[in-house]
Length: 481
Image (spheres, rainbow, N blue to C red):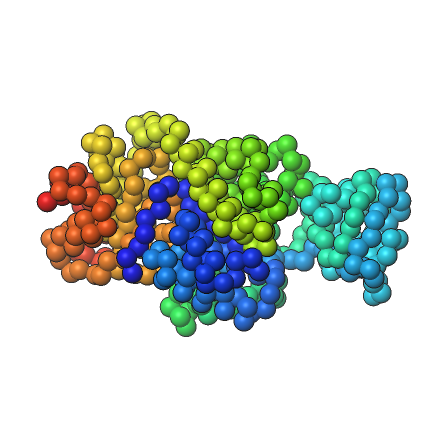
């Protein structure tokens, strides 16, 4: 495959759904610079996800660009049950009961619970937020399995809407029996990333990794793990969760409901900064271009939101319903791509300051940082990393630099995983056994794709002996012949 190179560093994650479930639409979206396709396991059956994963791979082949697939697990169903008429209207001041024992369909007075533990996890005086905080209930009493409330802020409540407790405190396990089955499904098509919903601590992520590694063993596949930060309880444990993960998702919907809308922007900046400092990837998600579900252009506020995430240093920005069920999936991707490109053009690169007071104990990490520093000051056309595991390009991508990083690897799984890394353009190159041949082959790759031409300066890193994981120990500054 002759890969097409994205023109901006920030990657776009797009959710696949009814609006984008054809090879033709997916191909167009990938050409428009989607780098990761998200499969939402909250909807659909196992075979649906398998079919869509195959569709993504085919669209990727047609578009000439490698993309990663992210399987997003549903997580615990902290939700109300169903209503007899599908929905009700709750009036301010009305009494409303959430009943774990209720078997009949709900009405304006009461509804059953998918989350049966709720009566044991709330008390009188607690505040419950339903449907992403649009409905606010004050808990007045717990009677057996029934949570009695008074409606503080009413509105329409429909089937299976989510429940959050203000300030957090619901203890549902991050991984359900359904999630465990879904992990097996995701490993059957070698999903490149698995996103874990509602993790509270590092233990949740460690358990998810163990399950993924066991399910992936027969395929010799180990996915990257993304922790979705959407619980208040996760915030004090951010560093430990990051250490146990390959990256995080700033999942602003449920998080905002639990900690309050006003707290989210500062948390977003803190999470992006912490992820980059810990050499992890970070995705910023939720309502990024929400208005484009029904409108052909975004609002000015949405444009600013995406641009600010880019300027904060996020690896990727994510689209959910906009591409899954919206009217303008392709137009949304194009708009987001344009915003990313414009925001990056305004970035202030302070690479020297990044390295002040820093020490690097590993040879391969020191080589990666040396390549960045040298390429920046020489005004190099490109930075090239010959990589087996993808570690060297990941380290490079944690620092802002306007020199594109081209990661050449003989492993397709590594190539796809690197599709999420900011400013990394992953390319496939057959394994070469000796250094000189590898360097010649790399330059031929670059020239064939028009990345460099005769006389252009570029920096290249590799390891000797070739193919040894973690073995990057050489930096060479080249002038293309």
